[in-house]
Image 1 (cartoon, rainbow, N blue to C red):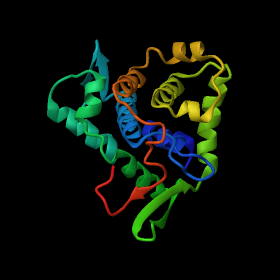
Image 2 (tube, rainbow, N blue to C red):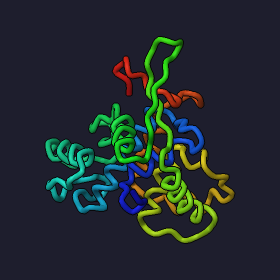
Image 3 (cartoon, helix red, strand yellow):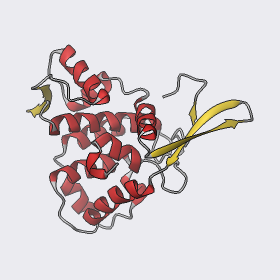
Length: 219
């Protein structure tokens, strides 16, 4: 697998897990919502949805051949109306989104899943990077922009998603916050995540950590 084959949500979830041990860097709820925003951005890039004023509308309901993206697109088609991106984030119901992508990328060799037990009883699944070069290439691309390189449109969107979700500050020391804000200011997907984060109180350690409890409904 190469970075060129990855969708926005795949790139984001790779960045959202620490390189050395796979620890998740942001809370479960923020990651789930951010992945949904990334899916909407990917659908926009594929010409299936577009921003019309303040609302995001379906302009082509044909499937794109990606199970996760097609499920989102089908929900939007079924709704039959345009909504602000931040409203789509909740309406699409992102619960368990992160798990789907972790399992999907594990099957493709980007993550490796291992099992352990909490208190010696509760089975949990842990995901660590299996193809470390993959996430390092994505991080290198963002790092160039953080250090001053002019980004292309796709990198701006990924940068916005990583910044608004809180992933970016876990990866880089941001010296010029003003420049970063200017770069991502007009990205609607990132703004939708920011709107959600601003309305949600999360504790710094409320990340769901690197554990996914198999015995529960989970998120």
